[in-house]
Length: 105
Image (cartoon, rainbow, N blue to C red; front, side, top):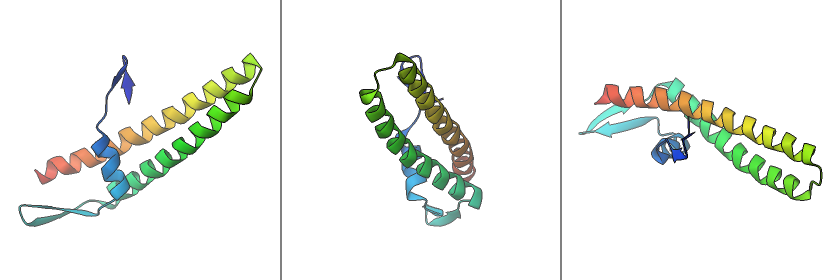
């Protein structure tokens, strides 16, 4: 979960690694290759992040234009769904990525 009790519960370096999508890592001169699953899940996460930015901007504009309380409630629920999807993608990638980093160590 990205947010818990008002605190950020994730490392931005995880998103950086997803964005960069490097298929390998050198440690002490030795090359370690990430699995296709890690690379694909990272690309999915970063694509979802870009979509999140777009959807958030669009939702904000719609909220500013809306006069109806019900329409705003629906938009808030839509944003909640977008954030939940992002959170799920984050967790999926982080689990795979960190396990492979641990195997390298």
